[in-house]
Image (cartoon, rainbow, N blue to C red; front, side):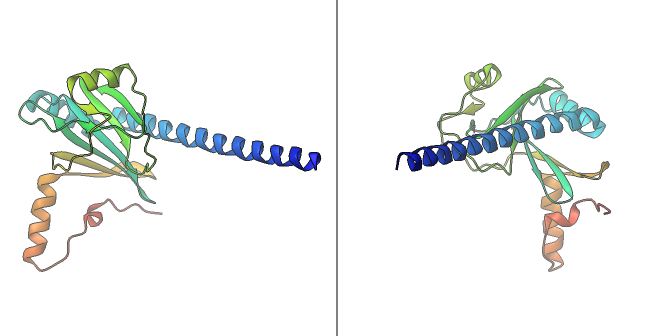
Length: 195
């Protein structure tokens, strides 16, 4: 009987250890995705030019960049949340995040595919600063909003093959197709990735 208890304890310990290892690997994977997105931004002239335009002409102070992917595409959606003329409610931070200042704009990266919510998320010093400015929150509920954005869709097999569009483009295309009695599918505008 005592031997069975020891075996049970070993099995339970092994299960706990494997769950913690899986959790650590998933967390590392998230942060690797954030770092890869920052690297992609630094290497893509069109994104940097857009950020400079946002900073200089719209006086953008804060952007949320949602990272997502499909089988063939990497997507970076830059949502303009704090500009001189538009201030949206604070963005709720309840999942893993990464913050970088790029081209003088604070950008909070979130993985759109991440479904794990963190009840009492820890905020680093940069996040604390954004919290004090009212750009992010830990407590409020998520708010439905329709801010301006620009989305870049890259082919995973060739990051030089990409397409970018904004909210206005989607509206015009949706109306154009509706007038032709055709259905609208955002993915039809994604670049064609061979292989």
